[in-house]
Length: 129
Image 1: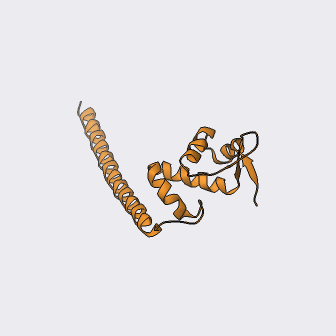
Image 2: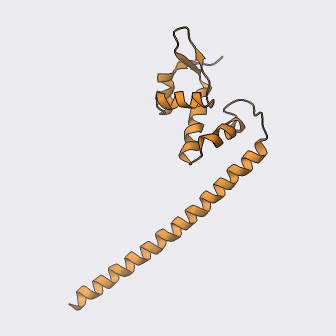
Image 3: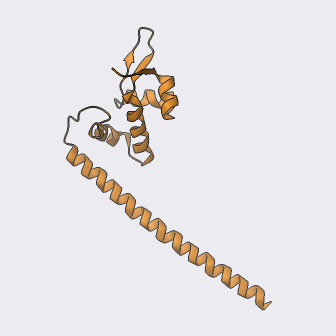
């Protein structure tokens, strides 16, 4: 059995608030052992699990999808479901993100061109005055 830690240490090691960790546990994304005094105790694998949860949340995954995907990451134990279907959905989300990123880059480049033309036009007008 690996190292055990309380919620405060898990919070410190992952940067997730204790409140978030309790919420992840409430959703069934994370498990802990309860001590006689009611304190939660997590094993060291919880660090990787919380890191994965946070990364998926940062990517915009809803918690319902995280609940289904997490077992397929290996961080939440063996998968009891068809991970192939879920991983195809994750790949679709990734591809949608790529398309959005490409559109953002195109928009940024268009704005840069607009600003350059506006700056050149302002310089020409100032020079003519």
